Amino acid sequence: MKTEPCRILLVEDDREMLDMVREHLEGEGHTVTPAGLGAEAIARLKTGGFDIVLTDLRLPDVDGMEVLHATRETQQDVPVILITAFGTIETAIQAIRQGAYDFVTKPFALDEISLLVGKAWEARRLREENRRLREEVAGRYRLHNLLGRSPAMHSVFALIRQAAPGEVNVLITGESGTGKELVAKALHFNSPRADRPFVPINCAAVPATLLESELFGHVKGAFTGAVSTRRGLFREAHGGTLFLDEIGDMAPELQAKLLRAIEDRSVRPVGSDQITPLDVRIIAATNQDLPARIRAGQFRDDLYYRLAVIPIHLPALRERKEDIPLLAEHFLSRAIAASGKQVSGFTPEAMTILLRHPWPGNVRELENVVERAVTLTGGGAIAPEALLLDVAVGPPATLSLAQLPRRPTLQELTDEYVALVLKETDGDKARAADLLGISKRTLYRWNRPSGAPDESSLDDTA
Image (spheres, rainbow, N blue to C red):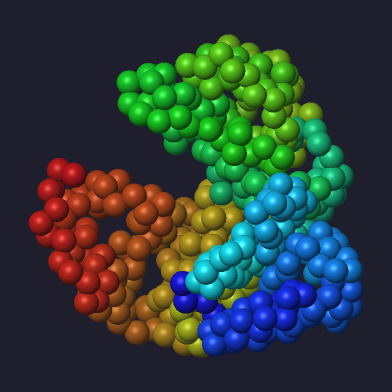
């Protein structure tokens, strides 16, 4: 396989073997540093700078196992490939258990070495990319990235700081659009579980008949359509955090099974007698009044108390209006970066409208309004007309083309409105078409990127 050039430490006491492997790897573009003894290899490891270590298991001074351990201590992410004779395969397998990447048995073809080097290099790159992404995500959800200067939000931040390091379950409440999932991620990525999975599920978006299987998994043949075994989200989240969004919409019969899983710290897949122990922290969220649903017999009080060990309530945006300028400027910066437009900020009149608006859709609505305003603004500061908000009644005002900084084309207005509806439906084209009162085929035609093939052959009823 073709591999990007990398830096290889080659450890082999057989001079003829060392030269042969070295010439082969250098012929493929790699930089090879040779070492004839284990002690020499360990000394070179301390200087760093290697991407892969390729070492014989049997060496005249220290053996390849010691080279492996030295690599783990000095350059933990560097894969180690062992060269072994048939009689030492058992030792090589033991080395893999202790962190070696793989081994090759003498005699070997040089192409085998190339293949192993390529796989080890790709595995290392994937690990580094995953770590970079985890660090990026963790940075995105650090507390200083949760915006708010109001007393209400300072109370939320204090609760997050206290709750994040612990293991107890958390229940986040608040209206739609207040940022409950953002808080859940802040809790996870500021916890000792930050390098483990964060697994979210919207309980309201999954049919009740399928939610049990989604959460707990199932075995093949457990029900019609179960053509293969499924692990389930509880097991996917093992060691990490399971985020149960819209928990208030969960069916009562499934609430009982969830309660059992939380109390027993284990799950039993649908159709199985096998019980799997689990280590999962539960963070749940809802926009509903769960105590009221308990009184109405629609939610179990014992499950509520299991979930709400630490309750965190997110205030509506209208209850923390001092945060609006901070949030608006934040969303403006993101919209400018995405669109490349030269927008300098908000006029005082526009900011006044933002402060007076009741924000029934909370922070999510504010984000959408700012994105729309950037789209409709040709340049300079965002004026009140670009917000399309009526302070007196709250919902978007009727579009007055004469008031806009420039007259948009019909295509621009169509594209903008279709984009807004698609965003509201999370990209669900069938639902968006229904809201727009058009066929799915027409929506594909309107939303088709320039140069993309026409999908007008789609069935209107799809």
